[in-house]
Length: 598
Picture 1 (spheres, rainbow, N blue to C red):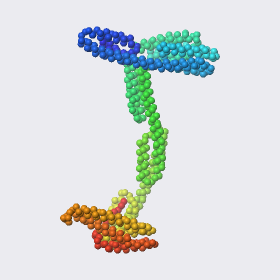
Picture 2 (spheres, rainbow, N blue to C red; picture 1 turned 180 degrees about the horizontal axis):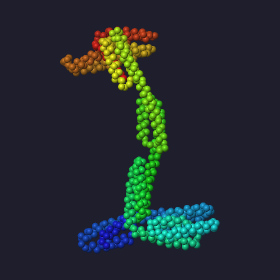
Picture 3 (tube, one colour; picture 1 turned 180 degrees about the vertical axis):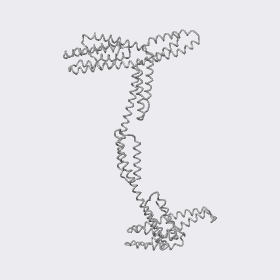
Picture 4 (cartoon, rainbow, N blue to C red; picture 1 turned 90 degrees about the vertical axis):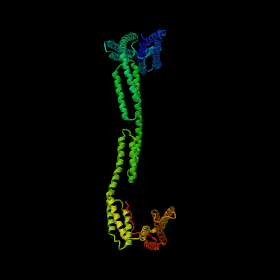
């Protein structure tokens, strides 16, 4: 056998074979290769170099085979130790039970339980395992032999077990007629399970029954083993298919899944893989690869279970938070501070949307309650603004009447009274309130046109207009609070002084700006002229403020003075103050109409 053939055979054993069963063949292949290599050592150098490359490949394969063998042996050893430990514990429990047989009913239940545990614990074929099996059999037999019960009951149980085992033997004899080995194997496993659960038979018939069973069992096992040995390559192919399915499950298991839909899709994938596994059928190393596959599937479904446990906990938390959001919404649903409360409701709705679902049973109930509270508020808001539209129509009618009054005002007969009427009309206009939005621009334009027209007709100079404005202001203030006239006058004084202080600061600033032009500036310079005009205008306003302050200072408010007396005093003092400075006031042709506010 050539070196490459030996290497190929070793690869087949490593990846597809049973390294434990092939130990003899591996040793023969090893010896054969070493002999071939030794023969080439004394020959051509080129052949030796090539042989060296093959030798490295050979050594690596042999090392991998030894590692695989050690892993299998360690795994088998660990499995045997677990089985051995469990069987020792069962034997200890059996001994205790044999020594204490006071309650026959309880003892029978215990022995059945122990027998079931023993069958499920697995098999051991080493010397220690055989010794434990013998010790177990001895104590089971001793239990049924020495138990202090009614002999008829014991014999009846033995006889029943004997009938069951004879029935099992008949079934095993019938198995030889099954041609399909897979069917034979399934039937054989079911019959073996029946045999193990049948229980002890009469002592004198035990060896005969067991002997027949071992005979039938050996024949069936030989037939099954021969069948699988003949199909080794096919079974190895199936093993490779199953390894690929294990890798697919592991790939799905290791994914990070964060939503229900993805879990559903991946669960369906795993279930489909399990279906494919069943369709493959029996393979080599069937039990081992099944354990790997089962563990991978179990790990996937355990991860899924933990995810949904956490999801349920999160939904329970969301349920409580949504109850709090409902309570907050309920506490403000009747608040008619529409702008602020609307913003609060919009935030609550956003918080609700961002939160995620509550528990499945509570989510629809909580949502219906929350939506009902939101509907309550927004319906009330809509109803309010619907009624507000009606009020705005009434406001429009009042403003139209006010404009009619302005248009019909006779300026020439009593200009001062006309001026006061216009000022009062301006105040009333702002007090009336909003009009429908689509009428707003039209009504404001009518109002401004009417006011500007009347102010043009007045033809008051600046001093007259300011006198009337100030007199009207003071009279309105005093008239509104006759009991606090002195306080009102003091407030007005402070207002005038503050305004005068601001005017002085502005004048000072502009005069400083004039200094930048230098001493030889041309008086016709536009910028110089603009700044100089502003200073003159501001000084005129300052002088007017002094006049107003002097007029207010001259008002003598005595205790018990009536509102009409106060008004007369105001008018007289203002008249005196204005006349004293009229010649210094800048002249204007007309006053500006007050801005309409909406």
